Image (cartoon, rainbow, N blue to C red; front, side):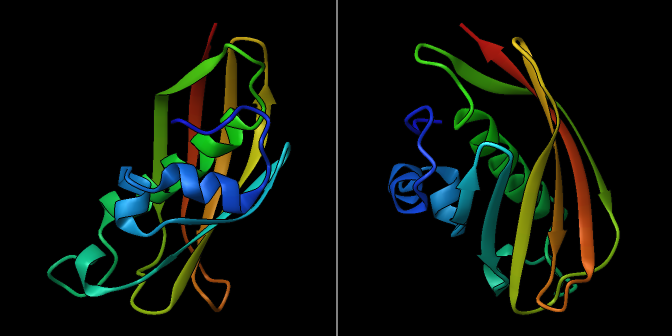
Length: 138
């Protein structure tokens, strides 16, 4: 992810996501701090499965992007990151509106960071919960 380390400006992060898978899907960062990143994604036909609900891969991509951004804003100069483990529980079907993903840290270490990302619909209903581990690479 080519976001400047330490940047918590959502507009700047969104500019850097343009041209990536996150940009292609339409993921937008709406809030970023060292301990919380919030993204949004509009539910539309292109990200739904044949049953008219949000595809599980879309939920995983939204969570992975949110957790990766959260790690990147915490990196020191010269560090990079990659996801090394991710587990998602799918809890409800997303059908319409805007999904919101909120990543909060479970662990922020020198070599790994673990983020939990909750994805909700507009009513606040929990659609999925992802825990991911990010490797910090010097």
